Image 1 (cartoon, rainbow over the protein chains, first blue to last red):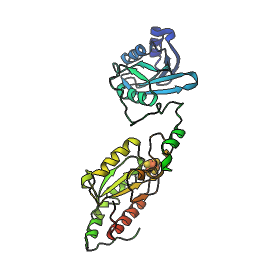
Image 2 (image 1 turned 45 degrees about the vertical axis):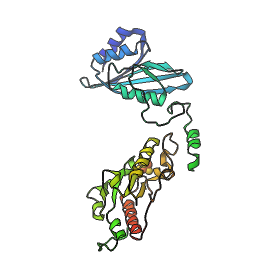
Image 3 (image 1 turned 180 degrees about the horizontal axis):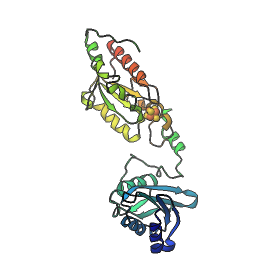
Image 4 (image 1 turned 90 degrees about the vertical axis):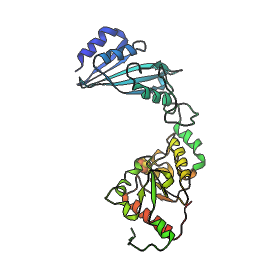
Length: 156
Length: 149
Ligand code: SF4
């Protein structure tokens, strides 16, 4: 169990890190927005050198997005997951390309599908969608079925 | 499947039907069951069918699987580059109706709204036997003078 990681996080960030869950080979926690980048940086120095993914959860009723960073340590063979909440109104968060250059493409995707701005990411141009004029399609308030009915009406 | 026996080439149509060159555009999982035809299992080469790497050499355009809004623009470009006569074969329920992605925000529902389609093969994905049946039907139609588009 990655107890040493939990201890290092608690001593460095105190209250800014919460809801810590330790598993056999994994650690999962929430970080405050002002501490999230430093916490990731600490995880990287502690051996989590691989960023597997950056994903997003839309908590529409709470007015927040949750950005989730999935890390892996080849040396420790352990997984670390860090969550950070940001407001749903004009959502923005610092990019982590300075820590993991590979974050670029994950953030670009999250930007396209949820509309989150990743400050410092060099290229947030559209990735999968072409000529998209609606709100980002992975947001909970995007009504897929209504969109499909309207957009492909003529095809029926 | 109807039997295809070796025959002498009698006409230009016969020659075309026995030398269909295909450009494959594998948009999705619809390709999975076409693979046995490409390999030695079902061996499409015994019908004179070759996979080519550029649309400019192709007679048949196979669209295998669901088509996204982004892919459909590429499909139109590929189609436009093919010389006539050309034939289009769409594999699977997805290019016909959107299949199980019918309510997705970026999957086109009917590929024939964008380019003409000559042959639809039903299935999710279509079985190799169905694809073989379709190929033989196409060859017979071409021998009888079907010109495609
Ligand atoms: S019809 Fe089925 S196999 Fe074919 S692309 Fe759609 S989901 Fe995949």
